[in-house]
Image (cartoon, rainbow, N blue to C red; front, side, top):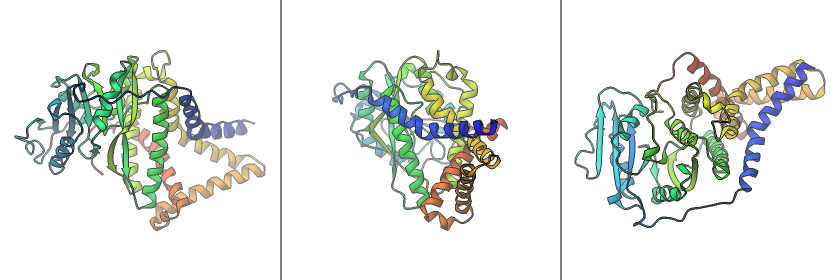
Length: 376
């Protein structure tokens, strides 16, 4: 009897996390009116500072500045602040004498959180927009973000990360996962708030910023959630696009995922208020979207073990189905050419993402969380 309860409890938990919650939050969002602020004209747009932190980005910074100069936003209302995080190339000097661009630099690499704390101490404008060097901003993205602050209840606005098409099957499945993820975030935004923001592009009011621990891994989770704690909303603006190239290899995507999930464990351990519905306005979304995903790998193990122990045709078939799925994942791991098969590729990507959650917990428990990101 215990095995039956464990099997069905674990199976229903997995089903809720990946299917039930997305459907539920989508239905709840549909019950909320879709409110959109009108685009502000040039005269009404406030002055802002675009902040970027980078390590050894000298080759890409000129192109990034050109991208920012092409924004549909009055250039006399934009300050650009670049922080060179211990770069060993020309990052700190490549933008010298470029009008409207300031560079802060220091010798010892500290990580992005330290860089952002340093930058925000220098910001004098009403709004700050965070972005990364690698991605390209759509021309109208920043105007759209800032326009959404017409509602005083809004404390942070995130852009929408758009991945350029991938020709590889693994890349297509990772892209499918991202589309699934963005659909959830859009529903959360309409219902109340997203849980965090897209680090490639998000905006806040400068006065709402509080310094974060310098070894923080996920600034794009910690900063918006601290603002959400104040009772303000974090929105996802689907018309503020920022473009990136999708990881085409599962190994590189898993490395990124392990770092992100390690950052989740770090934030959880430092912010117990997140688990308290009296203090976390998005407690339901936080548990269902962030916490439960990290528990799914253990539920998967539980369903596998209990289906092996339980008698009956149904449980035998359930066991065979799970074993077949994991064999497909293994085939994708050990024979990359097989990833062209959509079933093999999907199983491989799904397994990698859940394995990443377990590896992230191990990495965090061993004290190997590092704020300094190595490029993939």
